[in-house]
Length: 91
Image 1: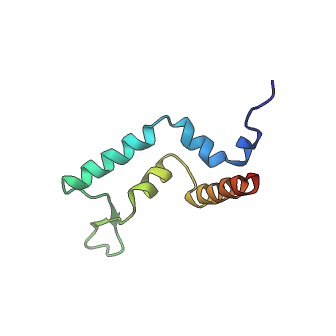
Image 2 (image 1 turned 45 degrees about the horizontal axis):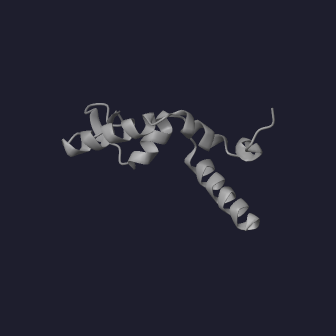
Image 3 (image 1 turned 90 degrees about the vertical axis):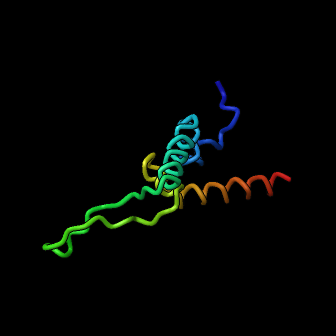
């Protein structure tokens, strides 16, 4: 059977994103909910041995979600640009 969209192999990060079937949105909404309640994502900073403490990690929600689902944001952006270029050439 011939693939209707042979270019899909050129967009592996988008394939990963599509396979999530909305799970990425749910995770993003959960992170937004945490923030709305005043919670932060943090990690232990043990650079000062006598006073280890939690240090908030400042990141965009999309970055957390991409990391969780192993999606490379830079490659995703490159794929988007490639898609747009393909559309421009086809017009």
